[in-house]
Length: 324
Length: 116
Image 1: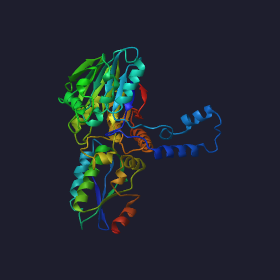
Image 2: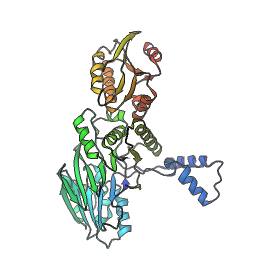
Image 3: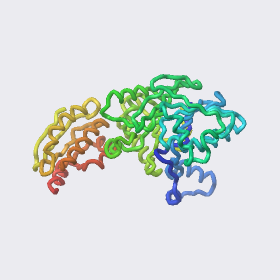
Image 4: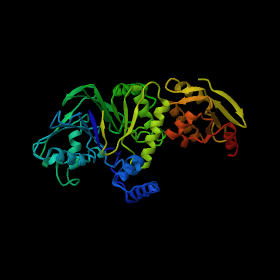
């Protein structure tokens, strides 16, 4: 199984700015002083191996959208699993068209964590919805699932109404705690603490497990709920986790905002014996350097609190492909 | 959990010991809470001496957050000193170093409290 991250930013999309790019260039050139960079290979090695990701790259700014694929993309041709339809759905749709072309019908199973704007805003820009023959099944646990998608394309919010989309679009209301089989994946939803509720999903396929758990606040005093999440994350190969805030913010000024922290992510994954914690739903106010700082601190926290199980710590970025 | 307590320079010094984790956070809270009521405007400031704390997890930090909130609402002052290197790292990573004034040792903390 593999994960492709198309949108990893929380709450609202953000774009890198000209001053931020200038600062990256200044830092890169400063670090190049005294080095011999007179060939393309030498420059490539310097960029790829010497510069940090916060200088040579960017975490990106699209809101939540993650593709869950099989190890071999050709193993199950024509069918795809996607979590959320944030603004990352636009580049995902372009990639799907590039991969399969408009003449080959595809089926997209979309699992919705919840219906807040940052998680549905990419749907009208997901090009496959405009192509006849495509089938899009939107799975979720909210009774208002269809209403939310129709409403965002109703006048005066969008020029193309939902009924004018050319693809076949279906809605499937799931029941939390009940396991269903969709496209060779066993999928279980779990209710999470978030304004209007959100739902995490546990995907299992041939002994591989991915948990998608975003927009989820964890109340530290609720022991039974903590244990339920440990069960939900148990032995996962990857847990995509809402680590938007610091612990101090998450339980003080931003309590009840419906998000969690890197510290709680590590503790839950350690207790659940999960293999990887993928930090997700990055705070939109954070620049690349700040996200790298949080990543390094989280790796250190995992190291100093580790007992007999190591959890690999990853910070998701738009474009990351993660083989499990 | 037992809290060693003593008074110096009008401050109440409380010294927890061991791990403040899932297994011990409730008892830490039960031991700490009775001391907070007098930590108010014109009352007795509290100094938490963490020299004997080996580790604090998120649930332990939550107890500290609740204490900080209560004391702030009462107009009192609570500070922390003598973090072990590991606990100091946990404070920095969790940003609790921004919630509490943290001092290197008891003397530094008392000097700050007496200067208020």
